[in-house]
Length: 222
Image 1 (cartoon, one colour):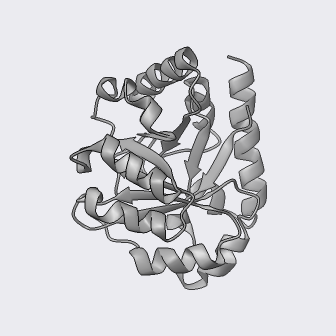
Image 2 (image 1 turned 90 degrees about the horizontal axis):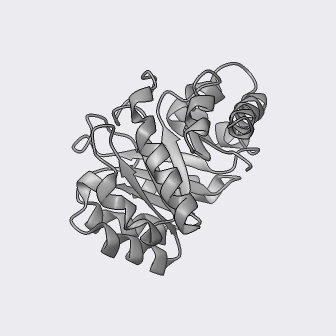
């Protein structure tokens, strides 16, 4: 397995965002956290900003919608050309219908669960999704500590993906660093969102390589 590293631009320099996007050109995707100050207590980007990021990013966009009323808003992000659009299970009235809509527009469809949301109801729906995001912190703020108690959800997802042979990416987001990425990889994650662990220091590209190597080493030993 090649570990996918998706840097979160929440940790980038918003004034020099195009330059900071260029610095992560070796990443697999760029993780764009859309927050509405309603579903989570923070406010970030809207469609206009994400559209501009899409225009200049050297790598495809992995959009993570931490917003309410995703059934209404999510399709618009797929229409902007985002490679992947992930919405929260807690914010949709019909996750399957929304995933099908996103796929019909041409985006990969992802579903995200907060740390306290059980994964079991979604295991039988896995064929409808291209990605499942297990939040390893409470969504809404960067810089939080990784929650190892979320790992059983990853293990359950990984077992179901293996059993069914589905091509579903298992993503983690929150507190991912060189110290924690191996824990998530060992539990079955293959796609990793990292913010400060990528943008801290002067060389995001080498940080990406270090994270990728740490994840792959952990996968191979389990």
